[in-house]
Image (cartoon, rainbow, N blue to C red; front, side, top):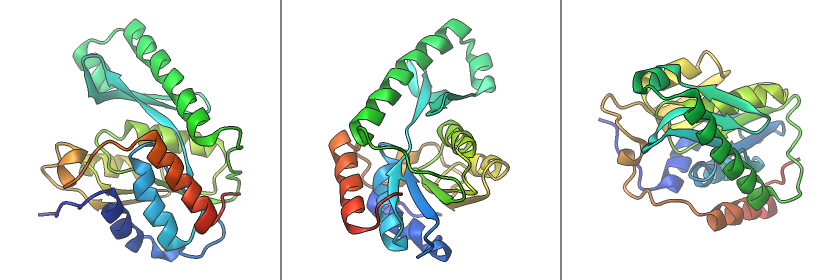
Length: 220
């Protein structure tokens, strides 16, 4: 049975071990999905000695059950919808649009909070390792991959400590490489596979990004 991670940093250290073939490659950029993916991505970037940045993606949660994703949005106007969930729960197009509008506001707020006026790194010709703390339905990661394709990344690597096996299989048709450390048969939820899984704050994200820029390698 796959063991649980102590916390997100422990998960990042273990994840980096599976990505060592990218260590020292000047074309590599590590992107964390805020907020919980950034502490994992920080450890990956530190060990690979690669620049760290973040990429904002927002889950579209089912009204009344926000943890259940009916889709996701990402920078660049990307939207991914989970038709099976929407149809099974009878969610109307009006409700989908209302949730998407609210999440778009939060996406823009996070981009201002974490990036300020700094431009997003140029991805053309680069290998991008996209990191989150885990994947359930994979809606947010699919939205990220689609958006990064639009930005002309040469290679997109999805890397997570734990995920539903079916989600990892599906992402292999969209990303160039998928690294899922643990795919437990009794997955249920990402949080179950961490001993400590407290919410990552905006201040923690900013601090990790600033520390990485100063001590690892600046994003370019």
